[in-house]
Length: 164
Image (cartoon, rainbow, N blue to C red; front, side):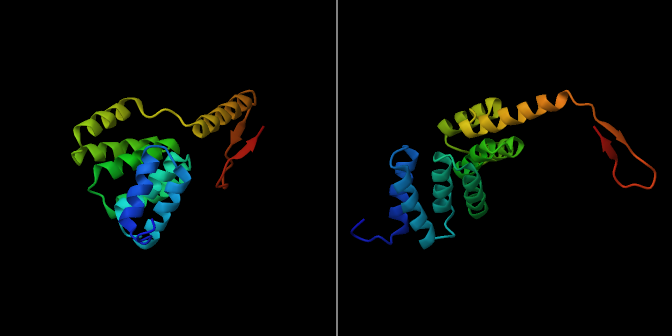
């Protein structure tokens, strides 16, 4: 990057290449962040930032940036597909499926279309973080199953009284 460190497209290209290959993820993220600071309204560069966060397991941040990328470039099937993947990982599965369906309407490349159709059938494998969250939720549900809860609604009250 000695030639010109302020070339957003070059920074993005190198950063995204690393991130997509799952190498030099932290360095790739820094390059992409610099590219976004130079071109904050470029949907493809914003997508790269979201995808970097996705690869790093920062799914909430990924969703934030990928939603912005799709807002900037709604006609791109890859950006919609990326957003679907991130939404799935944060448990927003219905929205993920919508994004994948949207990606299909935008005529993705044949190899991408096959992958997207598979996601619509099977979803994505759970991330470790998502699996742990789901396990905690299941444990909490099982703990609550043994308790008896009574609800009564009294006239003139806007909410029911709950007694355990």
